[in-house]
Length: 351
Image (tube, rainbow, N blue to C red; front, side):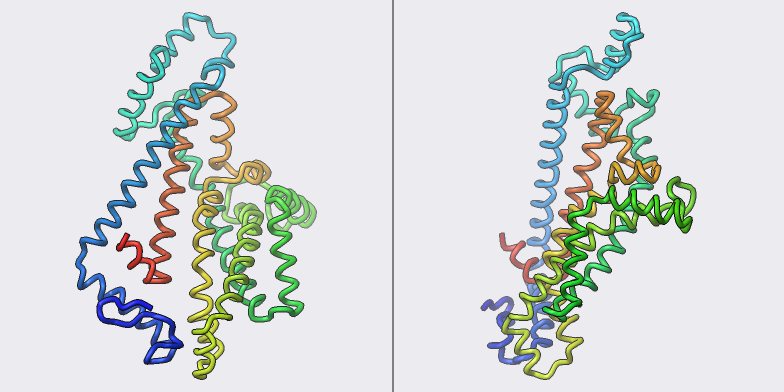
């Protein structure tokens, strides 16, 4: 039980209004009144703390990656055996790799603060920013398509499985979830490319020329999302159905659709949002084998080439980009948590 701003927030079964519908409205109204009465200082400090954690984590990622990368054997020119030693030394001097590692680290941080990720060793001196800007859109497209399709289908299947618990529909969705988690995306990609693309000729088995070329890669990536979302939605909705306030809502005569979608599904989305944050980053930054199977010019090629060639600047650029997206997704998850359940925002600002 909690009283915030003079408004009761607690179990709807003991609430004087005694309706789940009014309870949800009271919770939302409570948070709004809290923000108005307390002012924007608490909100500002909450965001400021998150920003400090964000920058600190990003700095740690940059530092650890930089020094671990220099501990690897070889250099960006290790594979260039035909280059004369004098020319290698000149190139290393131009890129600043002849200096001590701490000095290189300081110089890199200085360039990074100016937005300069450096030039790639393995892509004819092209800037790392240009390479990421070129490869990211394709990965973003197939990732978002797979995420949206998989998320919608997963919510639908999870809801149906929870409502029809113990029936053949529940068993069927469980089988789909297990298969989605057990079967790797690249196996599905090879299956779709061969049977749908080659045998049936419905869609292109590879290439990147039109929207149709993105359907099969997106479908391959969506099965993991479907499996994860289905499992979490089903589990959480079954837990929500057993809560006292759901029983109160049913006892008050609220329709089944209102009980399921307005109350049960909304609360069941919380853990799903947590899963979708990191999963989104994994999808939109590319799936190595899936992109290779369908010849998608995405981020995965940059990841592999940078490691294989010891391309220091490209390794750092792709790692920083990935870390930045991951932390942004975590921040967005925090915001979505507050939208779905305003009590979390109040608790977060009180910390």
